[in-house]
Amino acid sequence: MSLTLQDVERLIAESELTQRALTVEVNAAAQTDFWLMFGGILVFFMQAGFAMLEVGMVNIKNTKNILIKNLFDASIGAICWWFIGFGIAAGKANSANNGFVGEDSYFLDIPMAGKSMWFFQWAFAATAATIVSGAVAERVTFGCYIVYAIGLTSFIYPVVVFFGWNGGVGGAWREENLLFDCGVTDFAGSGVVHLTGAVAAFVGASIIGPRIGRFDEGIKLPQQSVIFQTLGTLILWVGWYGFNGCSTLALGTLSNVAAHAMVTTTISAATCCLATVALTALTSADKVIDISAANNGVLAGLVSITAGCSVVEPEGAFVAGLIGAPVYMLGVWTLEKLKVDDVVGAVPVHGFCGIWGVLVPALFGSSTQYANAYYSARADKCAGIFYGGDGSSLAANVVFLLFVIGWTGATSLALFMTCKMTIGVRVSVEVEESGMDDSKHGGKVFSATPVPTQEV
Image (cartoon, rainbow, N blue to C red):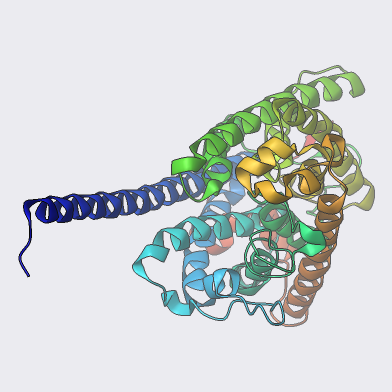
């Protein structure tokens, strides 16, 4: 059969169209990989922020100890995430019975196209572990630290990820059998990451007990540097744009959603910073405009918006940050009453504001933004109750909160109690008083003697 000139022209045109389609597909895949790698780098950079924040809040005699734990959080997390963490968290779900863990993707048995996602999610896992290390600083044994870092990144945290983000009971990306027909609206992890780390931190700090002198009247334990604290806060704020904005997991048609998430993140952090400073000044005897309140206010506002950053309107972000301030201060007051010593304020910031953050999209999520970030077909139903939703999102998110608190609390309790009955969870009085750097890390980072406790 001979081809006419028209046939040849048609075949060439079809070939060109096919080539263009393939080019678009390849470009979209490359764009997604770049976005996830870029986001992963920003989230990993948050480890530097946590390191500076925690160094600034501990005694100078424990500097090396807290720094090496920040490095180990990322390193232990990487190996555990490679072995089993990612498989549990992001493996294929068993749709027949909802499942509890992923069924594949262990030991990086994934296609090349999945490795950018592995990298992005590893950075999140390291963040969850770091939340705990700051809370129990200055008195936890190094052996106990290693055990809980492995347990958290290998099993405790990945199960929460599977439940809330992947194919588990609460996953919002499931095609059927959605929890309350909406699934969990926790876009970037107020509950998945922050609350999980905070619950483990609360359990650990409760079992280990407070530092010597922490709740003695008239004594204020020394902190190394407010400069480091503020530097750490600013680094964390920068990294949070990767945490929230890049949680679209792709760019392309979702670029506007990413930009919106970064805008709402900014508004909530700024609002909570100002509100926390104002409340602290109004409620303190000397009316101090406190830099520590400003730092923790920024972090509280960031956690408060993380779940709802893609679905709330700017005014919703403002309310999230505004209410985040008293929520954070309630957390501080509660720990003081319970005499739970949380060195860096991880539980008030990541725990109390993590709970509030999970409620935010269920209250203030708009159908317009939900349709952009999730699915338009269920946007009206799954919007926040103040934006016309029928409460299904609120019900799903409350169930999720109960799951995170119950699961993480029970497994962390078992982990820390096992350590307490075997290898021990707390250093000796002599080690605590002389400093962790002398006992484990070759001496103090500076030759000067430790700063004495201060009377207040």
